[in-house]
Amino acid sequence: MMRSFLALALALSLVACANPQTTNSPKPKTEGRPGPSPEGRLSIMGAGLNFNLDTPPKDWLIATSDKNISPNAIFSPLSSVTQDGVAALEIRTGPAKSIAVRKVNAMLLATPFLSWAWHLSDQGPGVHPVRLVIGFKGGAGDRTVTRGSNDGLPEHDRALTLVWGDTALRRGTLTQPDPQKPLQAAVYTVRGGRENTRKWWRDTVDLSQLYQQAWPSDERRTIRITFIGVAAAPHMPPIRGRVSGIELSH
Image 1: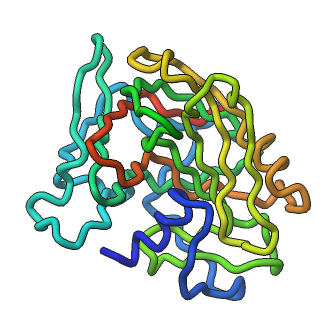
Image 2: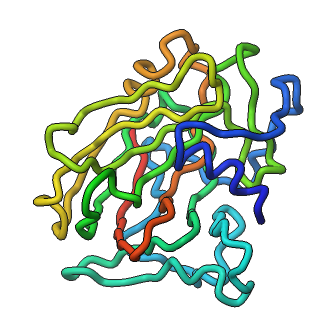
């Protein structure tokens, strides 16, 4: 379980440390991972979850980094809720990191737009601990290292975190990863302001454009999106975030 949070650290912090595999590793298998429809759309998470959080489908990873949580309670930070009439996945922060991502197989340029709705509780000072995380594979070539499936997530050599800032003035800000730290995640502030919490907001970002800004030397034609989901950084007292209707489209 802790292996999977070597990968989670990439998305929740700007620095990740692990025993990486080289880019000469075998190509990852993609069987069983959903791809876009002929119309160029892929629903990552619908308006409501249609599976038991305790027994998620094989293409979902739901985990926590707290080794002291018993197996029977390991998914306790997550629940299915209805907030203001909208069915959603609620993720609650705690003393440990939590993550719920779906493994996918989609070409970045074929489905570059990511849309979702989110409703976040007031987080107090700082960036909201609940955020979206996206993993990419194929653009780095031999210039960096990759995460392997042994870390619990599909192979990925880039990661992007979509966050809610503590001020609306930070909206649209991209924090680029350090070129000397190839496993560092890029962070994009989609929206912000504590005054804007406690409301449903529908947002769409162009992942292809953000990727180009973060890693301009990568060849985007070869890049696949390998996972999309939500994560929560450690925060006490607990803060809640609700996400619904995550979708990729052309």
